[in-house]
Image 1 (cartoon, helix red, strand yellow):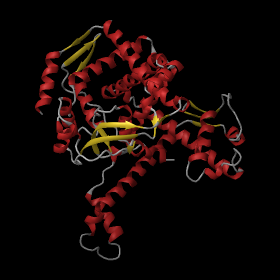
Image 2 (cartoon, helix red, strand yellow):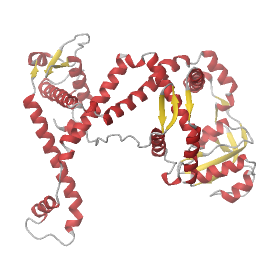
Image 3 (cartoon, one colour):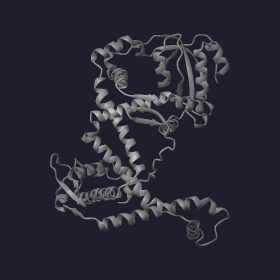
Image 4 (cartoon, helix red, strand yellow):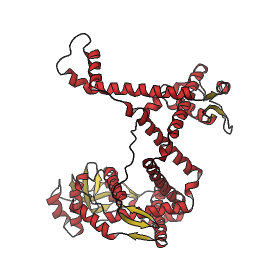
Amino acid sequence: MTLFWLAAANIYTPYSAAADTTVLAEINGDIVDEGALQERIKAIHRNKLQIRSEEGAGGIEILNIVEEMIDERLMIQDAYRVELDRSADFTKKIESFVITRSVIRLRKEVVFDKINISDQDVLDYFKEHYEKDEPASEGMFKKVEARIRKNLKKKKEKELSDNFISELRKQADIWIDQDLINLLDPGKNYSGKKLVVAGVNGDMISLDSFLHDMKYAAQYQPGTSLLLKNNGYPEKMQPELKEKILDKLILFKLIDQEALKRNYVNEPAFMDMVKKRKDRLLINEFKAKLIYPLSIPTENELTQYYEKHINNFKKSYEVWFREMIFNVRKDAEKALKELKYGASFEFLGSRVSEKWKPRQKIVWVNADFFSPAIRKELNRLKPGEISGVIADGRQYKIIKLKGKRGGEPIEFSSLVNTLKKIVGQNNFNKVLSKYLAKLRKSSRIKINKKVLRQIEEKYRNN
């Protein structure tokens, strides 16, 4: 039953508020400071692999980021205004987050922080297991030292976890409705019955939770799929599986209760982490509840988009093109910039492309042979147009479409779901933009342009 406890191996890392609280913007009394900006920039570097930390801002526009953060603050404020934070679903999400993070913090406190594997521990283990009968060969200790330390750490983790859980169980007030457990048939439908199967220090374990976990274990857990038989279980396996599932649910309750009892949520760093999570969820709720319903495309909108962009929905068409290929995105972006300033595609390509074929006779290629990223650009390009930088595998490409021919339009009925996504996203962006513009118009927003210019200058010089 310590498998759950051992699985929560994420180390708790408290958020450290940035030392620099220089105000960059003020939105209806809320502020965006330089610390929040630096945190956002780090996240961008972390999440976008094409941006390398040694390249400074990596093309990041500081003002754009601050404007985005202002929009987010407006969304959060409006979400509070219409009380999206008071829905039962939202409250449940926050409670779940607090419990999860509290459990991770608890594990760090009672397990990880108490693990101390000394050099002598490693040496003693080596002597016991590798030099039991005769001296080990020269260099053997160095080869196995890391493995030994890892094994000792895992052993200590399990020992500390087992001891901690054992103490929780000793101190807990646990009752089980064993008669109900014995009578339950997992194959039957008990929906609508508000029964409980057990209690842990006053917290109830519902029948629904028990049956849900039991059916999940039988269907998806390794080695238990054979337990299913006509929506039921072989009689001899039922008591064993029931005991296992109930024991797990009791363990969940004990750990959750202990984690919450320690009131990590009252610590400033923990509170800040919860606030950030709440803000992110409110932005999602704002978009889902206020923007998305206004963005659902009508049948007429789908038809109009299809007819206007029918050339984008052709199958098996052919293209005649030239391409520049780069191994580094920065080089591709530099070339694209020169093209926008009027450089000749062929002349520039012969000088800067990693691979460049001299002018040759017209070659038509079926668009189906290209990767999805390339095909997406080919769909929208018209002859004579140049693409943006396309990430294609480990390479970056810029394509000039010379010609496009053939291809039959795909039937509207086959594209309905695709069109819903495209038109829906377009509608969403338009509605969101208008909504935010309205919020900005009715809000008090101040931007410290002087400080922003200084920050941008600093990044340009890095």
